[in-house]
Amino acid sequence: MDPAAALKEAKICRRTAKAALTRSGKSLNNLIAQKRPESEVKDALVKYQGSYELLVEVHEAYVKLIEDDEEFETEESWLSECQETFMESELAAKIYLETHLSKGKVDTEAMGGKSSELNDVLLSQSSQANVCENSKSDTQELHQVENMIGMSSNGDSKSDTQTSNEESKSTTERAQISTARTFKHQKPKLPTFSGDVRDCNIFKSDFKHAMSHHMQRETL
Image (cartoon, rainbow, N blue to C red):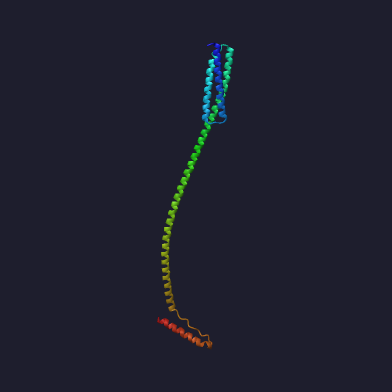
């Protein structure tokens, strides 16, 4: 193949590779700007890196055909500019992915912490429910015991009341007997005469009645 034609063909291939690199770089930058998911940015970065590798390959094939040193240096400077642009976009994509991964890790840890807190709350509520159930059961048992004690106390109170009533009744009867006996031995109070002649008949009647009542008690 004619050297001039081969050089022209190699240059066309490099231009095509550079266009592909530019397109993939723009696509990557747009995904980062729109804060797309990690998977999309990662795929775009891989494609961008592949485009750059292809550009380097076709560039080396092209410069091999250049014999002039100045022209060669000019083409190498061109590749250096392409490399700087590539490295800037690649670095931005890596920073975005690292930030995205760090954020995801923090979110996961936060969710894990919330899940742990939720589990603690559920365990606490379950424990409180168990305590309430136990307390309720203990309260019911206590009420049952109190009812039993109350019934026993009522029975004892009733028995004590009956005993007290019987004792009181017996005491009253003994008091009545003692009073009757004391009254039996008391001397009768005789009526007194005031000295008024008009009361003479009343005095006699009262005196006879008192003496008659005294004689009856003595007979008993």
